[in-house]
Length: 289
Image 1 (tube, rainbow, N blue to C red):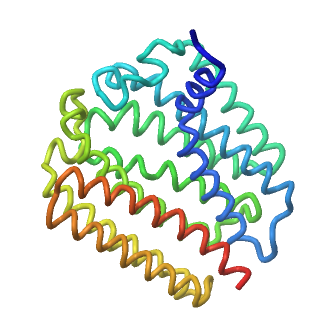
Image 2 (cartoon, rainbow, N blue to C red; image 1 turned 120 degrees about the horizontal axis):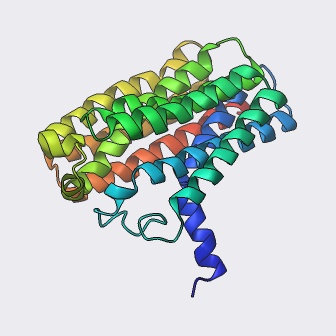
């Protein structure tokens, strides 16, 4: 018997709401960074709703397209579609409705540039990454990382449709953060990805080489994260915190290079989440300190 809690949990999983929440937060931060004064509450709410719905739509379509390989992996075979809890047809219909509502809210409530960025993020994640590159290239997530960057661009465009530097820098941070984040997880589950026939980097080149790729991306990420301070967009609080977080994340990736095991990769994966979440928070905090 399926309880209401189980039913809600199925849809939360289908929409990948934990990822969607982080993407939404990224867009809201970008909007605040791009605005000379705080954006209106209405703009932030509309932006957050649009981002959350668009991301949820992309997450559901990702589940639909990946249902066959999800069924082959222990980590994912319990997801709503391969487990039979939600049908593919229903998932597609709901996802398309959410996407239409998100794009309409963005285009009519804010501007067409926001809607364009939302659509770009969904297109890259669903079509470019999931449908095209994921099963064909070991560098799938490098290109797929652009999907999250569109959230920052959408947030910036919600208050300044003309391209401005702070949201672009945040988009670059997200772009550089995404591959090492997912590569660490891929090391943990590389045997399952191999069974499913997904050519993630550790499957194709091994954990040791992947760890070096993670370290290289993390070095670039930390360098770019300090750029807002260099152009005067952030102050000393951000600079000190970003440097400290960068040292912490680099230390975890160095540990992974020294011992490219599943345990070290899991710690690097956790460190990536801590790093990005606190970096976004301090970007906002720095505005008030």
